[in-house]
Length: 161
Image 1: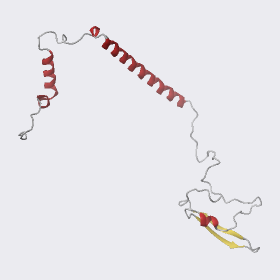
Image 2: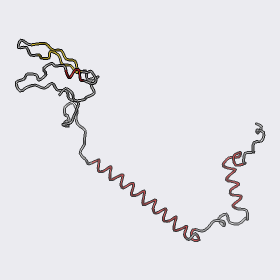
Image 3: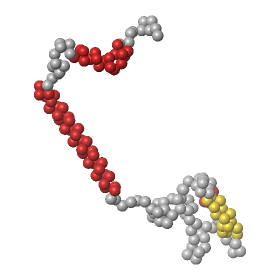
């Protein structure tokens, strides 16, 4: 493969791989023929660097231990805590007084429905989910014969209460 015109030649480290790079690095280090470790600083000669690295190492170990202890304490806390799971079809959770999902057609204590079939809730329903059919009784009052809420359209605005 020919190099492109004007393109710089690739460095030799890229052409002969990591093994060649390691050989060249060792050759540069040992140019005097002495001990390969002679160019390195001894740990005792480092002075301030020694203290810094020891401190850094100690802090890393301490940090890791505290993180592990924190994680284990959280695990143990949740292991012995009361479970939140309910056996749903047979047990039901208590509903909040502000729950907006229950639709109820209320009744008087006598058992008669409170709805007088005025159809205002059908007209006001923002999702148009309420359908009311009514008829007149013998005494002249109107009562519902059919009161349906299409739950697929309902946005739970708490209107029919």
